[in-house]
Image (spheres, rainbow, N blue to C red):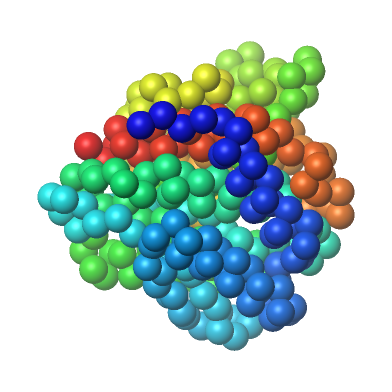
Length: 294
């Protein structure tokens, strides 16, 4: 089955406009914003044909909720490929790139894969409470989900969508993480026109499998790298929650503040995103999940 870019693009625009353009900042302190976000994501998955599970837990600021949709594996329900994206923002931003772009791609990948049967279970999760003040704490929705997966003895690999909508082709539009020694800077791209797939050392096999599958499905540039976790920038999303449980995980990202000056600003609006590149990302991630799940 072939999927054309325009319908995907139109849906991505719709999702980002609803989340960032209409709902805006999505924080527990504004419960109406969280309720509207949950209702939208849930309704989109139900429209595609998924049953949606509400994964409720207690955060440091009260009740919080992840949303989960699944395609059971034909061979194993214990072997799980998780694709996740957080839906919350910091209070100062409408969060188009951070992280409506990732939720939009999550929804469209789940649409592309709805009729696909893999040996492994595909699990799509939209996480609560990734942003400050919850980052790196037990209140993160991804921390709760990863711990529950461990308690169920699930064999999980995780793909974390974290800001996947901002792409630039100008020279020197891409920065290198400050934690990377300067003598290694020459190994990193200088133009912000790629998707990065970033893992820790233990995720190198997943990184290779993701790259193989991604390249089969898209023309989008991909930069793959595995780094030690002492490089603090690579732990700044939901992938770190799965690393903490011993799982392999990758952060799939446009590299956030290393490229996008709108990060955590009121200027992180839907009109700043590249929806053609996001469409290619969705196609590539769907292809990669098929490859990993086979």
